[in-house]
Figure 1 (cartoon, rainbow, N blue to C red):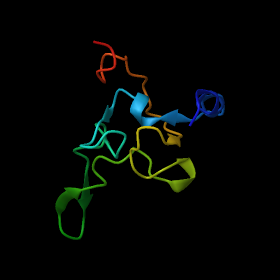
Figure 2: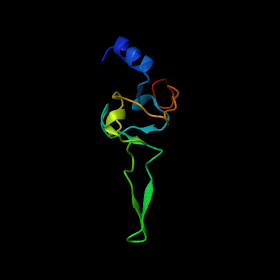
Figure 3: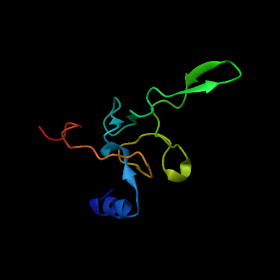
Figure 4: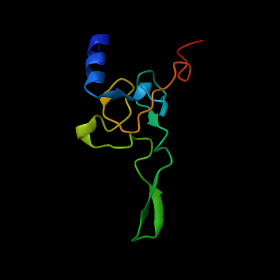
Length: 94
């Protein structure tokens, strides 16, 4: 994806998980990562009276209308919890 395409998407309100301060890189470069906001998310199930893992590590809103339902670093999506990270955070500046 070119820089021009990325800028056009940003103007349309799209963000990229890889540029968010909540993004945690996965084991492969440019592969699926994790959202720190949901990494330990649990949901209470009344039928069993237990807290169970709930879409842990996925974007806060996995609605397919908002973008990919996983955290790809360069996939455009809409995310209300997006917070831009500093370049140092992801090791881009020595």
